Length: 275
Image (cartoon, rainbow, N blue to C red; front, side):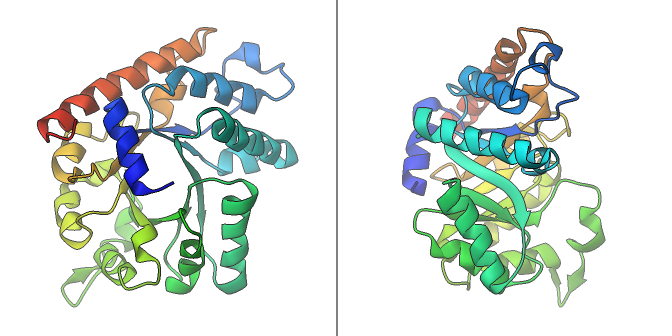
C-alpha cells in the first residue's frame, strides 16, 4: 500500500483511526469464549462493526503469542480476513521486533510475505542494522518506536547528550537510512506536547499515535500538533473501543465508540482543509 492510497482512504472516510486488536480472552464477552476460535471470532465482529470508521487495524502480537499455536493461527486468520474483505485498510503488526542481519530479514519476511501485513513496529535500539531489512520490501513500512506513551519512556528516551534528546537522535539518524521514505514513527498521545518539535525533524512522515482513550491522551492536542498536508497521523485506540462492552452487543458498542472518534477526527481534518 502506498502512503498516497492511505491518504485517499483517510479523506474518503474523514478518519485517521487505527483500531488496536489487543485481544485478551479474559476480557472478551463470555458468550464468545466457548467458540472454536474466540480470538478470531471477537476480532471479526470488531472489524466488521468498525471498518467504516477506521482506516487501519493493529493486531498486538503479544496477545496472540501468549496462546501459542492457537494464537498464531488466529492472527493468521485475522490478517487473511482483512486482506480478503477489507483490502483498503492499512494493517500493522504490532510486534516491536528489533534484531540485526539475517534475523531482521526473517522477521520482515514473516510479516510481509507470510502474513502480508503492511507495516511492523520496530525497536530501533540496535540501529540501522535492525531496521533497514524491513525497508527492503516495496510498499511495506517499518514503524519505529520513537517516543512512547508509557511512564518508563523517561528512563531512556529523554536522555540528553550534546543538546539532543535520545528520541530526537533516533528520528534524525533514521532519515539517513536506506529506505527511510518507508519509515513511520510511534509517538504516544500522552507526549503530544513533543509532537511540534518532532514535526521539525520528520515534517511529513506518518506518526502512529497510541494512548488516546484509556491512556488519557488528547486527540485534539495530537491533531493540532501533528496533522500535515497529507494527514500524517494514524491515531490508535484499543481498549476504549474493543472493550467498551462485554455484553452481546459489544460490536455495536465498539462501533459507536469508533464513530465518536471518527466524527472528532473529521472536524480536525476539515479545519485543516484536508476533506
